[in-house]
Amino acid sequence: MGALTRRRSGCRARDLEYAVLDVETTGLRPEEGARVCEIAVVRMRGDGTVVREFTTLVDPRTPVTGREFHGIADGDVVGAPRAGDLVAELRALFSGAVLVGHNLEFENTFLTSEFVPAGLPTGLPGLCTLRTLRAQVSLERYSLARASHALGGDWPTGQHTALGDARACAQLLAELLSNAPGTLYYTGPTPVELAAGPGTVSAKPRRASAGALRLAGPQPRPVPVRGLRPWPRVWRELELDPRLCGGRFDEAERARAETRARAAVRRRRALLAGAALTGLAAATALAVALARPRGGVLATGVRRGGLTVPTG
Image 1 (tube, rainbow, N blue to C red):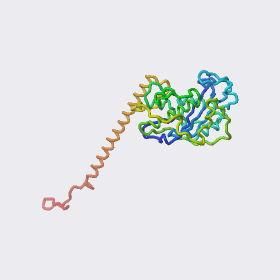
Image 2 (image 1 turned 135 degrees about the vertical axis):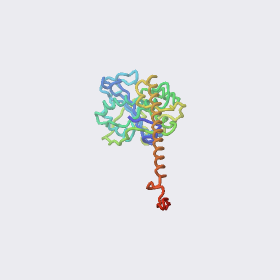
Image 3 (image 1 turned 30 degrees about the vertical axis):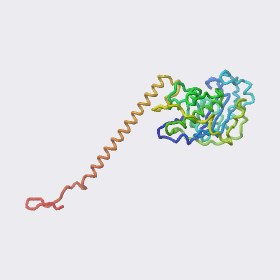
Image 4 (image 1 turned 90 degrees about the vertical axis):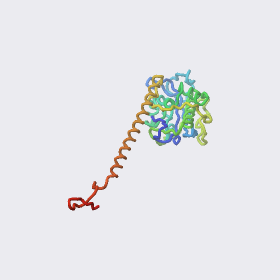
């Protein structure tokens, strides 16, 4: 898992490409039998330009539960591809990009359980926008919908559809990179080029998303959803460690992360001060050494009649 930081480290985040992912599932835990029933990917440049979109329903090979959340019924997935059928398509979408999700750990558990056994590589570079927002900006709530409304002014459309949520996440990432008070850098694994798989998949998007299949392939779209808007003044003075920004991120966890951030700043300042003192001491020692006469001889002379007469 990578991260974004305002400190000069890694590579410029706006210079990368991103594959923003969302899945709808029949449950929360693959180990308890939950499966993917819809997937969407928005391939985007760091400036917000969408170069490709892909979405399809997925046949989970099990009864589709959770309809009250995602609106997908058993009949909707009839004729849809299975997870293993999508690996070649996903390899092409993920190739050379950073994988992004809002709470990416959730998507990653389903990628690992269903798509990796079918040939999707592991260890792909990733970025969680939920952890990133918590680390960089101060909000009351950080869910995809609430963060979109608080920062961009609009509630996202198509909530709890894979494509709608992927677009909303892509919009947040594009505006994050656009509004940052300084350059943001990505630190994490380097994006890798993936070998293309054989053939193409026969996708089955839900009706509301039918026109979005492979949208923006030959003609890139300048923004994920709408024009990029300026954000209110919500940027943290001290960015938090994204590793401490998971879970519920309640008041106690938030306070702990802020305390760690202040301590980290104090340590960096102490190291810089120590390095400055070390450099000053070394410079002083060098100046003293250069001021000494070569050979350590102050004067020379010969003795005449009980007196030493200088000769040089």
